[in-house]
Length: 404
Picture (tube, rainbow, N blue to C red):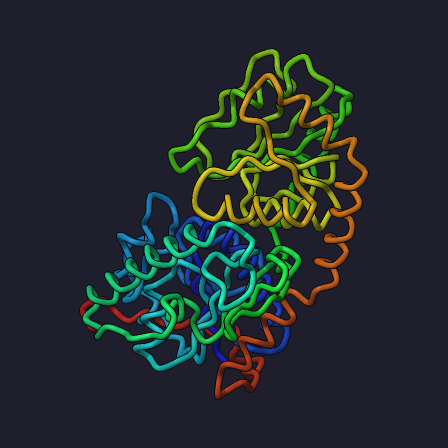
């Protein structure tokens, strides 16, 4: 079978997709990854065939930053369709928000599997009545469905009529990387949705960088909090609270900038600021994880049995933060810098928080992850046979733009 992976090229979306691609490749299938120029080296390090999206369209069509997934949706549709045609793809695996990829699959009449985040973002089909954020979920699905319909119109496709507004966003299967414990009791998801668990992969770390960071944390000699920053979406920066928490305090921080803006650490603070393509070695140094509550750091923390302190801003962050608190694995960060140390101290000293993190971490590690995700991708195609070994690394020849 020939599989085209066309995820968003940002690490939080890309790495988990590559984990599934590696599993499909190990089963003998031809796997190609349509990716931004900056992700080509990462895809190659994962052992997969990289297709530079610039051969098919603008370089930003697979970028989540600055709303490129909306502005470039029609171009994404064209790029994915052309790449899938060149590859002879039997099935696509794409990311949540990749509306252009879903439309390309529909036009090519091939299935598209969507890899989602770690918790369900839209209204439940049933159950979960006590969660208290029904209006927010209804608003979110209306907004995202409206963007999907807009891109659909711009690509000349007829409107859809669906019983549920989120239905066209789910593809032929929708994979969630979390655990049912992250949903309200009794919550009922649609039939297309399946929990597979963490699909963990990241580029191998640089040993020298890891050794230097470990040496520095030992020199400081305080308990380490791993901090992973996400986008603020117009909300408050965490830096005032971080500076209060890690300046002349009992703790030190390793701060991964992630997709956040410029850092603003206090000169006297015990804050090691990094921007690395990996996080597992950094989390291994820590006793606690503080995050805006995006999927990658939350899942990584729990896989390492670490409790969380959450400070959500926009997008999916409030949903996942609420899910972690409901599951008993997280506490909220204080809005007041003067209370930051108190919150961290209480979180580290709470045995119930640590116990729940270990329990959920054990459950997440026991989930099949990329294996079940790969099986689901294969099940969608009418041609699930492996590709002969001598043809698995064959690179498709891009069709010249003037011939498309």
